[in-house]
Length: 254
Image (tube, rainbow, N blue to C red; front, side, top):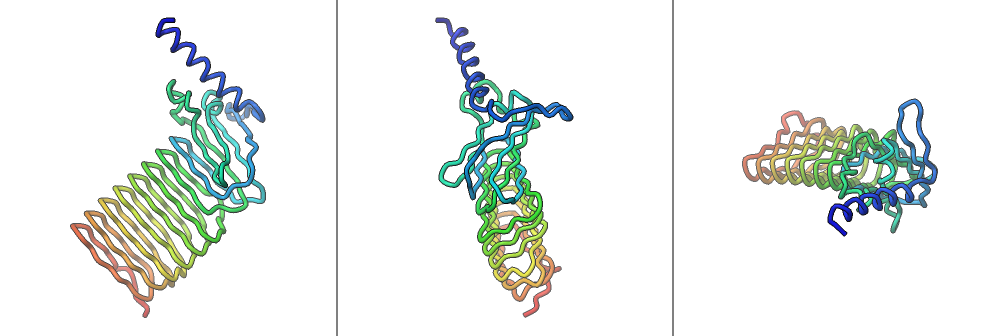
């Protein structure tokens, strides 16, 4: 068998596998011209995405997953739950044949609780409405972005490694841990957080607006910048390298 024939056969097998795996629960949205694939999943508390797929999350009563986009892309998006983790990615065979561009593909996710989000690659995470949980950890490795509107929890951790962006419009918790390694950006508006721990390694930037918060511990290592605004009881800070910690707009209320 020639190499060309092998390639053609492998391409057909990959395409047929994707289509067969995801055919159930699929229909075409006539208004947008997109394919909608409803996936059946058990309950999960964490989300892990690999690649360039965008995830839109809503906290709700029942777990659900819906993939929306062009038929070729939707067919090759894999979604499954293992160990309470919803894993989102592409079928391994599809990557070989360039089906993993991620153009116009969104995965809409709902679950009763969410304690962890991990993005590996360039995909984005967006939350619709409020997330209310005991603990929430957001980890990004790469250039993906996370945009969260309203978060209430006991302990909140964001760990960004790369060039992505994280934005939280409102955060209320007991402890927030904000860690950045690389050239990314983090912007968080937090209210009545008892303890805030900030670590910046590299050339990125962290902007925290604190309202009626407790202690803030901020440290930089490299050329990155931390900006603190609002009000907090006390501030401990140390800049190591050429970076800066700007607290000129932070009022200490101790």
